[in-house]
Image (tube, rainbow, N blue to C red; front, side):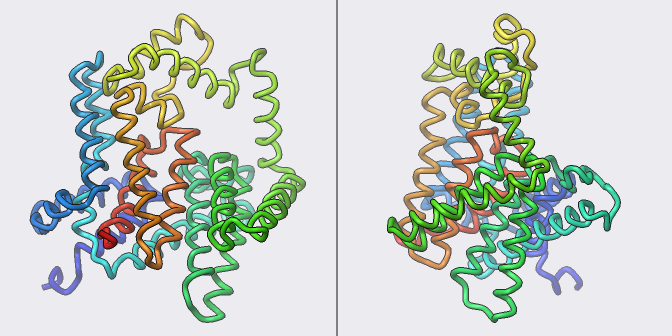
Length: 393
């Protein structure tokens, strides 16, 4: 009786979204509960129709298939299977699309904003000495539940979603004031952490917002020229971790040839080595799960003093290394179609769709974000929310 009273499907989706920025364990739990629900209760016919007619879902499955086939020439089958298991979200996209109803999009978007806001409030509580240091959060870098590499992009995206509501959704003056307040507090919170990817993508989303509002006009150019440097200057002048990380990045780049054992220096080495190796097998790549073994053997010879990473800290290079130009082409085609549909679907979510695509294209330059749990979850749920029905066709 209790199960009939409550919509288990909706509850699982909400809990899945809410735990994205907070907990790997809980988010994984709700992921598998959602899959189990679909197995026993899901509309399989609707899922098949989505696979048949939704190009985004179709390309996602093709990409996952390429990863699976690439196991055939991988030198490390065990690692390859682990990579396949991590990349399962591309397989699950049609499932999420079939489970989410049209009238639940607002609920899921607002749930993510609420979850990021909770993390932000805890972050401020630790920073201001209201709360004790907890989880990952310290007074120096108040990142509560997850590493700053993941946390700062989430805050940037949460702030972007609030901009959407503030600029494009009608609401009361009180709601607008609250939205503006949290846009500002998220912006400040973002620069209290060391997550440079989140800070870079935040500036990108601001620039995108100006051009979306004012098109390619004098107003948009003026806004970019004035507001972006102004914000950068304000946060840099306050000192703290943002100034330290900016200075460190500049110093690391300028002194790269003298010292490669820095956060920036290591990334540059990873990229150089990965590109050198990938060019030797450009068509099919080395196979899924090959990176650690192939890269590790090469790195020990040419850069023995640099640590061996699990991935090259660049999603495009990671895909290219494992699956060659074929896999990379399909991967890029997925985002191309998402961008194309973002332009053609003229509904209230157009602003969010285009920003969502740009968000991932930017952050994947600095790390393999679609190889990490947190952003895989974000990608699958928001792609399902924004691209379930491609109505313009």
